[in-house]
Amino acid sequence: MSNNNNTLTSKRFVLRQSLVGKDTTITVNFKNGNTVTYSHDKAFTIMQSALEAMPCWAKYKSYTATNNVPKVLRETEAIAA
Image (cartoon, rainbow, N blue to C red; front, side, top):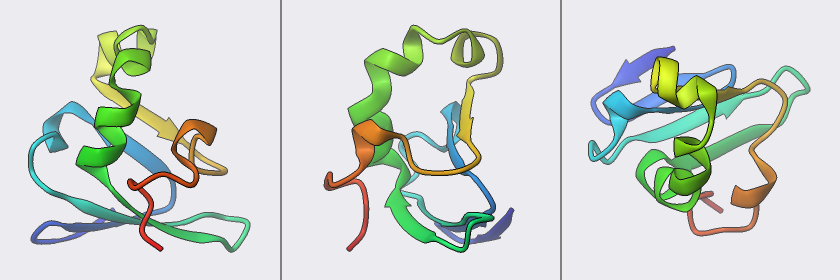
């Protein structure tokens, strides 16, 4: 994962507790060739209740998706046009 100030580049969609409130924009280059840019804080706000119910969030304070952006976030303000 590359980091330039508040911009990250990754190979997977990621939400992490350590990035909440830092106004980070993340660009994901999925292995299928799709590229998506999203606001970490907006994505976290939309998914917060679901994240807090997930064992991975409770244990690691992190959520990742390897192949695509979670369906709940598609076509929301979290995804940059």
